[in-house]
Amino acid sequence: MNTPDAQRPRSEPFRRAALVLLSLLVGLGLLELGLRAATWSWLFAWPNFVLDARKVLSERDTGRTAHDGRLGYVPRDGYTAAGITIGANGLRDTGPAPAPAPANARAPILAVGDSFTFGEEVGDGETWPSDLQRLTGRRVLNGGVSGYGFDQIVLRAEALAPLYRPEAIVVAFIADDIRRTEMRRLWSADKPYFDLEGDGLRLRNVPVPPRAPARETLSFWQKTLGYSFAFDFILRRLDQLHDWYGDHIRVHPRGTGERISCLLTARLAELQRSSGARLLVVAEYDPVVWDDPSFAAEQRRLTAGLLACAGKNGLATLDTYEAMAATPRPRDLYVLWHMNAAGNALIARLVADALGLKGP
Picture (cartoon, rainbow, N blue to C red):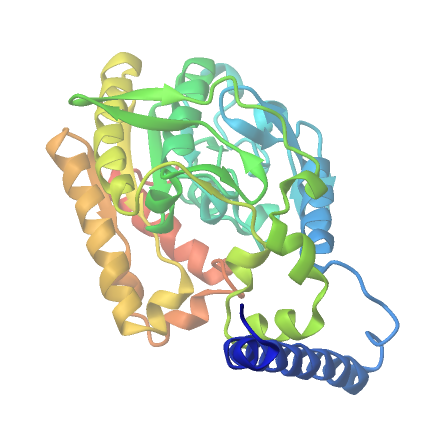
């Protein structure tokens, strides 16, 4: 029979572990209160920071986008805000139709892409599709949609081309759009995605389910640590809030998007054949490329791979990197994360030259 004295040594490690855990919890609690006291405004307010961020995103996107069973979402017809006007079929306004008169007008140019094509952070008249319209004298349709992956961009081109029978289709992307093809959900919005199947692709998650309520998308840790000001403070300093706040669901391993995007250029080639429109695949770049050499090298590798696939499938391509790098300060071509008016004007000139289109 064991005596209390015999049991005591075995229980000692557990008591020490409990003491360490208690000390850690007390320390974290004091850190939490100390940081909140330093800012004062958060000392008596204890919201879930992740939930609040997702609610703001949901309210903004629900107002300016509409659910779409094939694409996930599209800009909402008739939506207006400061500098943003959305018309029929979710196309952003590019200004008055240029001469000649509509009865004699040539077929339009269709531009599809992500937020760089849509023109986040600038007004309707400062997007590159608007500039392209002024440069060429051709009607340009801005079918860009913020947050799209390359898969959604291709599906958007396939949806709009039969409606407008364009003379040319400009398919623009940034390297991150390739990564987005690996996802089933991005920024709380479900999306279509493609599975690799043999030598081809199979479309999945269509019809796309509507956006889930923000509270239902939180993980256990976001439901608990989401209330911590200290945790939020640390992640903010480490620049890790993007994934903490973001609601993303991955369905493919990292790197799979390169293969998927390459195969999607074959669909674009088929669209070129079936529609009779000339296709131009255009690579744009986010601003971090000009700040971080290692990031730039990876983005250029991804971009070059996709452009090579497009070229092999008979599509014209345009890489805007060298022209941007030749400017005195490429970083001056951006507002915060997207092109400013000068940057978009440069992209439009490059696209016009690549299409061989001159002014009216």
